[in-house]
Image (cartoon, rainbow, N blue to C red; front, side):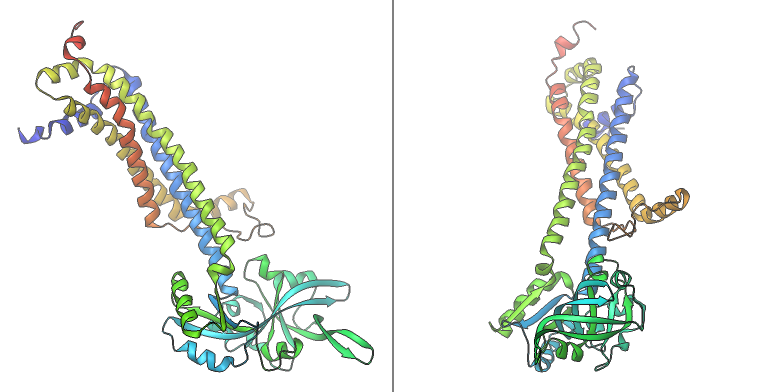
Length: 418
């Protein structure tokens, strides 16, 4: 029997938690506290998972069209790119490299005009650094052949110009040509050979691909290119990789990575995630501090019990531990329910949203307005641990004052009217 009562504070705290009370309102507040903490944690875990999903989806789409890093010379062009590509391919962290030429142009189809960013690529090398070949909705990357002046458009761009595969469009570049008639803009007629869709209007509406050799002629690059695009084995280790390349290649080269090219966007997403976590944590804090009112009522209700325990030799510190254990148990129980609910909801969120959209016959995220038309969810264990730790800490803090008040109970005064 002795072992059952050790430690005595833990035994009494749990007994107060599960024992029937004369005041049922106390039990109601305990239930509200548990449900409030559980609901708040469920919301936090779900929201963070959705934020992670959006961040991962956007990063995948952006890097699927661009690259992990680019290398060029400080003067803005790269001449001997073949030897540099061979040198870079020797790095074990670099999975592939591909040359490119980047330029601005105006596309014209009759009365329809649109400004675009044109990228010259080698169709056989491009799959090493991007996934645009897997995003083709018409035609193939291999349809780009040197000298044929073919062009691949984003889906939204093709719709804006009312063109499809096989149609002709006029491409006008800022570079001017000197002719007997004067200085005229450089223009060339291209044939649409394909259409891609990556799911971001930034690229689907304002990007086009042509063959690298055709881009050399169109932008008068001679034998030079804009630079090399790189793909690494771990995109989250891109910063130390680019630093190593900067040290190895010297000051004549300029190296940029995806964290620099899209720094503002990813910084904004991370800040939004942080602010959402702080705001949602306040919900848990409100629920956790319901424990304060509940424990104060319990302390008032148990004045006689506390006095008897004190006369039997229980120290003020032990009395304080009893009520801290009781409040912490409520917080832990609510946290466990919230974590279970948040994990289950996050793992099944996409199916639930799809079913709800089918039931209501509507689309919550219209693809015409939003970059991402689905609601992605990416549950990360680090977020779950962080949320659970914060909720546990808030629950413990909420028990300190009521437990301290209980420890200050004087036996003589408490038993005076008993």
